[in-house]
Length: 277
Image (tube, rainbow, N blue to C red; front, side, top):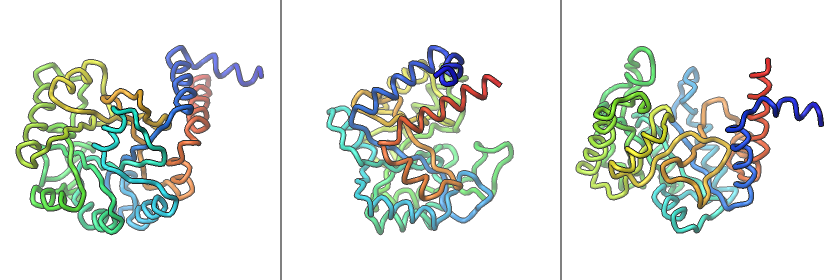
């Protein structure tokens, strides 16, 4: 008991509150949102899941009776307090062009919907926002590919105009990043449901308020472990990031909401021990 309490002393009030939230969340119906970036065969890229692993993960969901639904449906279920467990939402950040070749066919074959969050300024260009140097080989979807994919169950949301850290922006620039990207996507794609993914997962209360005032229905971050419940703030919907090193066994554990608390407790204790040393 003494060994367990020592790390807990280093957690702090905020983290203890998070632990309590995690405990309470395990008593409620919950659903998972998965966050991918790219799918392909660049094994050196942490954020590119191999095509083979991606297909295995998707077929695992089918085999184990998970229901993959659109983000909009999950959002409305949450608002109506009708959460269905074993429900999964699939999302992708950045709109990497490789998705068209490597991910879209798998999703279409399984009739899985997905939402892709686009940095609107760079549509049809290359990634100059995720790395210190532009990545010429990291091409983004163009408007033609985006428009054609909608009929196959792919929906789109905003990743702002230029993918900045919204927390550090002045009000004028923040409003521009949120409003302009939403309006362009609305006009070009006819969107009626407006979802935002915070770049880098970074947000604060000011950013959440600005997103709400800009006309978004919801916004997504990286919450990890603690799943979404009927009480989740629509402007703080949590996602689990999927990277290229995750095994199918780990994926199975990740999507199973019964493991949320044990996974969260281990992460918190690991963090407390690191701070102690």
